[in-house]
Image 1 (cartoon, rainbow, N blue to C red):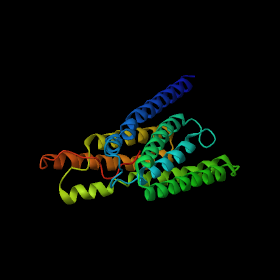
Image 2 (image 1 turned 120 degrees about the vertical axis):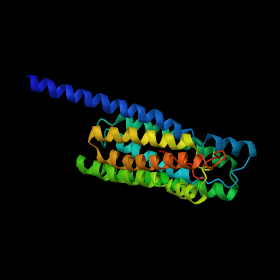
Image 3 (image 1 turned 180 degrees about the vertical axis):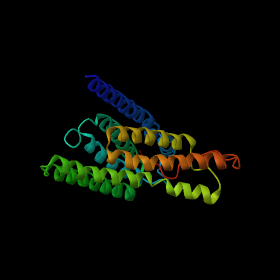
Length: 239
C-alpha cells in the first residue's frame, strides 16, 4: 500500500513538473512570436518589404502546423501544451505572412502565395497520409519524426547568425531577448519532453537549448567589445 502511494506521489509530481514546464514553454515562446514586430513596424512605416525575406515566416508556419498536429490526441495523447503553443505560433505566422503580402512587390507577392499554397499542400498530405496509418504507434512515429526533423532544422537556422557574430565579433544582428527567449523556451520543452519520456520533443529542444546557450555566451563575450546596438535579426523565425 505504501509503495503504491509512493509511486502515485512520484507520478503526480512528475505530471505537475511536466505541466509547469509546458506552461513555461508557452509563455517563453511568446517572446519568439513577437520578435518580428519591430521588422514589420519598419515595413509598414516604409510601405515596403525592402530586403527582408518572407521565407522564415512560411517555414515557421509549416513547422508550427506539423508540431501542432503531433500534439493532437489523434497522434499523441496528453500533449495539449504542444498543441496550444504551436496553434498560437501558427496564428502569428499567418498574420506576418498576410502583412508581408500586403507590402511586397508583385513578383515577390506571387512567389509568396505560391510558397504558401505549397506549404498548405504539404501539410494536407502529411495530415491525410498519417490518418491512413491504422496503427497508432506507427502513426505517432511517422508524425513524430517529421516534427522532430522540422524542429531541428528550425533550431539550426541561428547557426548563420552565430557564424556572423564570430566572424564580425559583433552582436549587432543577435538581439539579446530573442536569444534568451530561444533558450528559455527550448529548455522548458526539453524538460517537458524528458518528463513525458517523449524523444520527439526532448531531442530537438535539447539541441535548441545548446544553441541558445551558445548564443547567450557569444552575446556576453562580444558585448564588451561592441558598442553597437542590436538591430533587427537578419533571419527572423519561430520556435
